[in-house]
Length: 252
Ligand code: 13P
Image (cartoon, rainbow, N blue to C red; front, top):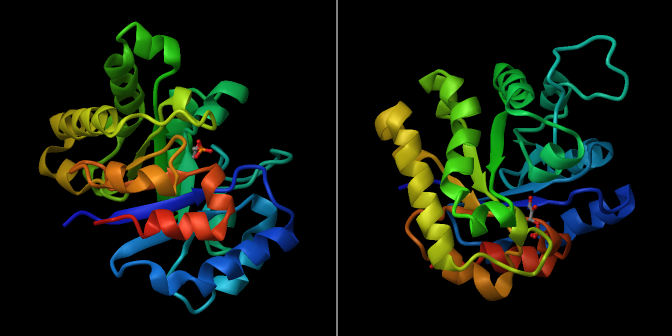
């Protein structure tokens, strides 16, 4: 059976104190999460050590960073390397989020570098893809998503590809309250899996493909019931422990 994952992307929210409280609140309710679901939290860089300290000696939630540098180390003021993240320790890193692509000009070329640094340091990338509204309306969404996958993931060795988690996040659904229907999500997730199989064969059957974009307790169950939706990458609703836990409890 494929791994089921619910990951909370806190984005640029919470102070360290608030982040620690959120982590503690999640841990308090963690018994409600069905066995076999992997929970992951992705706080801002500044909180990783504190949150890691709270998670110490627990198997879950796993810890993710929201980005890493494309370079190994050196004179790159303000950057955070994959080795630094691994030393926290983080186990995951979100890469290719649409906000990074749009506001910080992250191209496929840069993302390939980042994903390689992550893999070299033992981090599992959560690689995000997704189309903007105009692309969906002009029926370009499959083409956009396949290019995003081809330009980065197809360059990886199968052994590295096995560690990748994909997140489909239609940009028009992020933070807008407008969720993709479960049919739209299933259609794209099945397309992504079939496309990945063109390069990686059967390995694509085991790739977790998460849905992201206004996922909340009221719609998670319907999305997660679809055969190719293996969980969620949650933004706004991951900032409330109860909502995040309720989403994680939405698998049938
Ligand atoms: P929202 O859940 O706030 O729409 O954000 C989704 C997202 O971007 C997760 O990475």
